[in-house]
Length: 312
Image 1 (cartoon, rainbow, N blue to C red):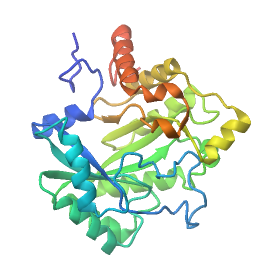
Image 2: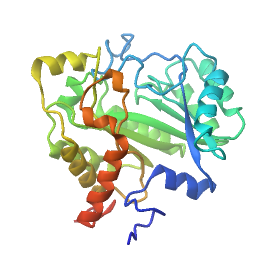
Image 3: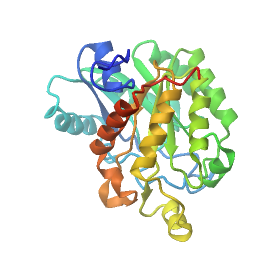
Image 4: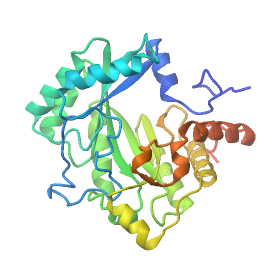
């Protein structure tokens, strides 16, 4: 029997689905939108070329078409998702590239358009910690006072050598300061991390989670590194053939990470789902539900749950 506090299923970790159903009493799904943003790590403001793993869509594989107006994007994706969940409400999710990297007037135009859609209960904005101006922060505070706002910050790792290797172009100090600024305004923060970055050890990946557990964050997205076509990472992999985690290694690391995270931290994502036609490695990543099911089975086998090892 599963006695994990934040679950109404067999899951032994705090899922986003549980969080939303508990909060709203119905299914909530994200409508992924593309605001046509760039990134300070692409245009030369802080760096060139972007992070080495970033796909041509700017990690917005399932977002709308940036050629379409926000309303058109929203309608197309909502209609598709409704076939599966006819009575759901929505979170508008600005996903591709850096979604606070524009003048506030432009942000306001896009965000307000998304929020004006019927049955939208909130807004998720994916961005970088070095791309939120003070003016933007003031606007986010205003948004947070009237909708369910979450800012998703990319961190990926706390290991400095890896940060340089993957061309993140921001420091851990910059990240932590932005988390604190957002939390001072009571804005929810979800942090993205990546397992399996080149040459990182299991200990490195656990250290990233131990660090996050000490911060005032509300959620984590755990990704597996995917080597995608036409990225600097593809060329690096072809040349160096660094180790790619097996499915079993990934599951083992994720469960150890979950054991170190406070139970109230919502696990917004626990694996990635890249597009099959873009993926070079690992091939096991395309079978997302197999990975999810195997995590559940292994947690039962170990008789473990999120937060179990915090005080050990």
